[in-house]
Amino acid sequence: MKPPIKGDSKNLPITSADEIRHLAGPLADHTIAEILGLLPTVEDLEVALVYARGDGDVAGKAGHVLAGKPARIYELLSEDDSYQSDEF
Image (cartoon, rainbow, N blue to C red; front, top):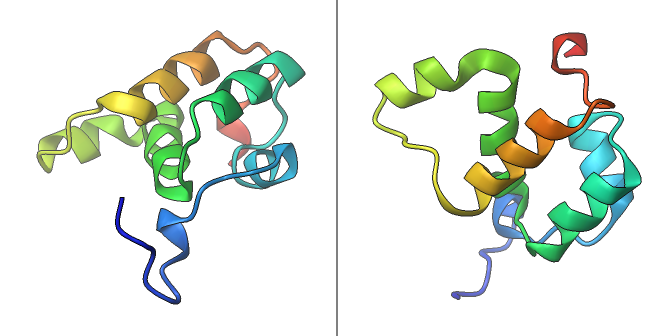
């Protein structure tokens, strides 16, 4: 993996539950633990959130297929009863 470019925070790894909750809102502890176990970047989480919030059709039409870590994060968000995508 190439080192992140200074100021390119989307490629930085997420390292805490607080970072995830700041971006995603309320989530169950087990979901947070699973997401952290994937060693995602901010971009991975943001892409998953776009799809989880229902904007995936727009992203899909632009040629961005959900795969890899964002796809797994999306699955975890979809299974979490604490996640409230309509609040954002």
